Length: 112
Length: 149
Image 1 (cartoon, rainbow over the protein chains, first blue to last red):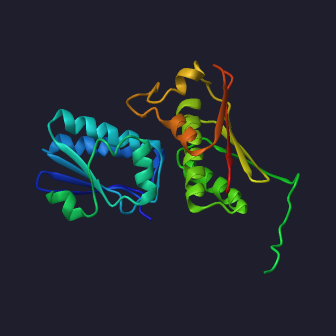
Image 2: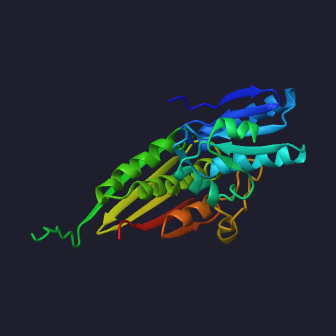
Image 3: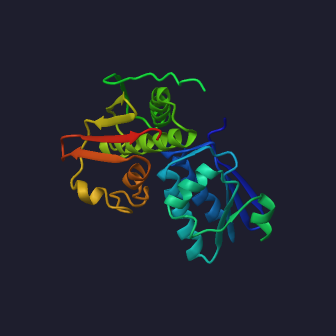
């Protein structure tokens, strides 16, 4: 299973496909990589895709929170899709459900 | 209607002890080992996820805070007795200055890197956690969870 993040651009939308295991080890590069991408491109909407994700701990929450603050300060939005019931549990405890809308599919996340 | 055959494990305690290098790549290894050890209790999938998440938090804390991403050995001792799983994650690292403050939700001594939710997550997923730590004296986090009804 690919432990890395996969980035996909669609105009000014950046989609980040999260890995299967979203822990401290796998999150270490995410901040650096997204900082680079967001410095080089104008991103109006950040979409997190959790469809591959089967494990997540508070390290993932830290990453989401930092990206959320960054997008909020630049006037952009953050949404996510593809979260399994377990991942939704983690997001809920981490306070993420009140911050960002969740969708069931990539299309909805992009166009809604 | 047949009688259910029930195994009574009164007084039977099973233990394991794991020592491993403090490295972020071992966070997954450690949580999987404890989950597999706990599987003898026939936990639900949700209980397994709870255990893995809590262990991941404790081990990550040892890696990032205890040994500050440097070298060190982390020890995990786990025991199964009747329907209770107890796990202690210990390190010989720098120790916690103020345990009460460290356990406050959203508090972190590394706010740029961490969300400060590690202990909150451990408390959410385990029944009880106990932290013993002092500056220079290392840290040990003991967690208990009752598995099944």
